[in-house]
Image (cartoon, rainbow, N blue to C red):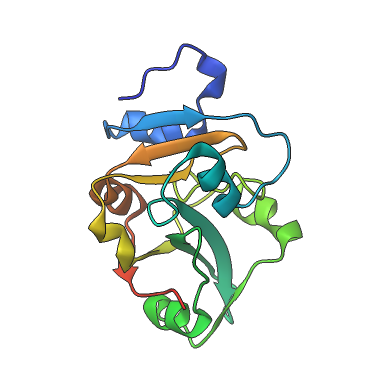
Length: 162
């Protein structure tokens, strides 16, 4: 379990991991505005391939779907739709992210959204012992095992990047 000296840093994602007794580490950094994941990984000297971003989309049925991919990759919408069992998917508009997920752009974690949405994680996650995801707010990261990420999000794993 992560140990935090500052209880204010605990996010919903971290509380869920604590409740599920899933081991993780927290990394924080200075960030006041949205910075894309590639720049954050570079700024912190982290592997782009090991750092994952969370994208929210929806199918024609308006069901929210969550896609977790490496920060330096693009989501293949056709592959994502197939993996989610949808005819097609489109990414949510930035203005709709908070209402749908409870998180703000740049702080979207696949863990701890308003609901447990259908989640698909890119298969590249399996090549690592530890991956980096958003901690649930700007300036916060969670580092955990891919198996634990898959378990806590009940995710499917598939090839979803272009």
